[in-house]
Length: 455
Ligand SMILES: *Cc1c(COP(=O)(O)O)cnc(C)c1O
Figure 1 (cartoon, rainbow, N blue to C red):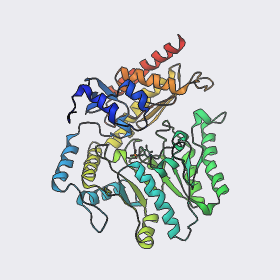
Figure 2 (cartoon, rainbow, N blue to C red):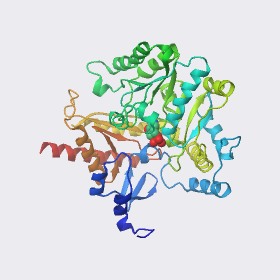
Figure 3 (cartoon, protein in one colour):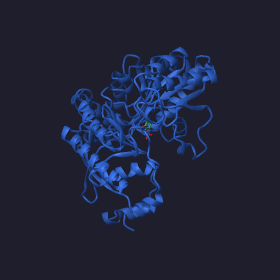
Figure 4 (cartoon, protein in one colour):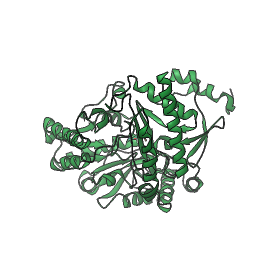
């Protein structure tokens, strides 16, 4: 056995030793894994030299695109100076502290503190405890239950997966844990029936009010949602949804938690998704675009209402990670934010590439098997449908979605399929021409699958 396996046997080594997340291993080992070797701009290259346009920015995270040597240099400088020190016992490092200031500066006046983690999942577990500790500290220890949504995604740790609304995750490991309950999602296409999207948005938002009544306001700590559901299928809520949710949280005195792990750092054409929808959450987990995926780092934005209680009442929050605010990851994140700002990527998504993408991607709505082609900023979805006029879905949604994805991949475009929704979330630096290429390959894939199904 060699320590540096030749490229030709890497797939075999992978099959022998590497268990992949969210992957059917038997099937993967039979098919062979793809080894991604290099990235440049909006493209990745596999070990056979095949080039792909990455319509998914890795996993919703490579906002500034691949191959930015500035980040590597910032990380190297920090690694040479101080590769690690902790933030537990009265110490910090320079990049960690500077990053806290920079993140808060973009989050609006009521966010002035951040607690660092290494991932979005850890951010979920962090705010879950924080919310309960907060209510206990202000004399309402019974306010413990968290209301989340079916088909939401908040990570894979125990609290994260519990708050997520993925049935297939709950089935493994006896989840959700106690004190987490779910309400419906604002997925009009699938669940809206005869209501207009606006009526449906209000109806599902009011499920929150009903659930609070059922549980008793004094037992509910928080409501958590993604501004736009990502893994659930890029489900963009009707315009009536978020204002009603914000109204209910305020009226019933429960914390509003906006999971910004995907929507944060420019994806919707705003620094954070809550700004796009005009709401002010109390807590906001972040990760992914914070470092554009160059190094793992996440955190929780903590509003003044909560931070003041932690600082003045709680004393010590008995929680933290060895690598909370890791200095090398923080240095990479600072450089990432500098690039986003200097290249005006947030404004670019809002004013230029976002509208361009909306038009190009939206043009796929005329396809026979596309029920809706929607986007916000650089997050898009195609809803596949067997009959567009009645919103009838395919009998085997997963099979249709993965067929379209596989065709696109064979033609050099990475898209994701969540059941019968095709998802796109390209790097924020994608060019107009690259958007055209995405849409062209996506259309070819739709044509091919549609033709296969009819023959
Ligand atoms: C990816 C994701 C998470 C989990 O983040 P990890 O870094 O994978 O732990 C949480 N919430 C949302 C909305 C996500 O998309």
